[in-house]
Length: 423
Ligand code: FAD
Image (tube, rainbow, N blue to C red; front, side, top):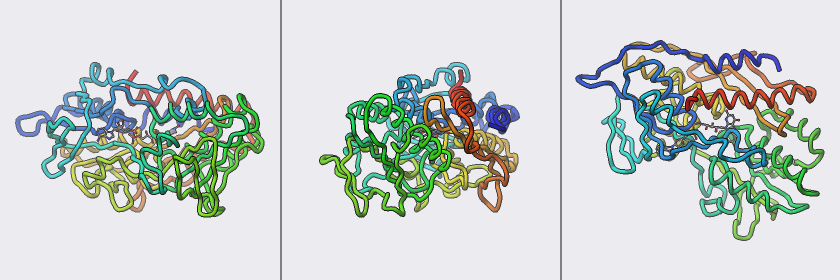
């Protein structure tokens, strides 16, 4: 794969921040509050500290351990335990002096610049960074609600849902069909459903006879499509079938109790249904008035400051970042930009456009991966891909190249997690 080193170098060094001395607002120290300790929020905390050693930084996150979605398709396919995806906040707290509060933000008052915790306490901020990820849009697929997700898991937030889908997969018998319902755009991790199809096929092809993976898609094309289809064929023959939206692939209705899934014209009763429903910005962002009618949050593409509520930056899956995909890689880059923009704003300085990158590896088997990368600039008021930047792995590459990409995927995971949660 060409350009590998430069991608890694970019990841490590993107948007290097200059340290700015401590700032006071009136008699007190300036404070940035961060909502969410996932890829966006944790990275923002680290880079704020790097930029301003004496800044007050409060990170609010309900979980004591963040379980990453990257790597979770591998857990479903049996490549390792869920525990290998867990990241704590000890480094941020004890090494970087970030105040980590394990609670949920229940309300944001943009005008009064404060947030209310689930426990009732108010915390004031000078700038707020919001990175709550996504929430499911229940019942947009008729019958698919939180109860149905206990029978037909989405596994689109890592943790209990991932473990449930893994257990349900282990119960599939010879000849069983697994359905993956993939949503329309935009959604978290555009290549994710297709990576999952490959790793489920990998598991079933080794442990069962005559199983199939049927992807019912709301879309007519998908990320890295030619690479996925080439790899599926080479690795699994006809075991994986993809049905586009135009070919009646969109799932419109499910009945979890009876175990069926319907498109407009067909009903399926699979051994296992993995329903990935339409999504919107995390609930708190919507409640705070940060989202538009489409369910995600419009932002200034230079600073990631909300277009709807001043003083608040929205990053990661929750924001609308033009052509940047909703990925951990994007969230990590956007966090660095928002941190730099927040610090510049506190210092009364201007902030100009910075390029951002995304790189995304997908496994089709433990030693077979493909990737896509892109560079995004601000053009015509939005984040747009720089022409001729990035690209995808070549079609027709040999097994060594695919194995090397799988190794780079592991390196990428280690690097980006260290960049977010620390060593
Ligand atoms: P998250 O990382 O989800 O973090 C959000 C955090 O906010 C959570 O910890 C949550 O608890 C917290 N939160 C929510 N609401 C509140 C509240 N009210 N108060 C306080 N905290 C709150 N991306 C890649 O780049 N590469 C991959 O290989 C990849 N693989 C993926 C595989 C799968 C199966 C899936 C589903 C996704 C994958 N992604 C991948 C996408 C990636 O996981 C997301 O894009 C990324 O996590 C987005 O970061 P975020 O900060 O927006 O959200």
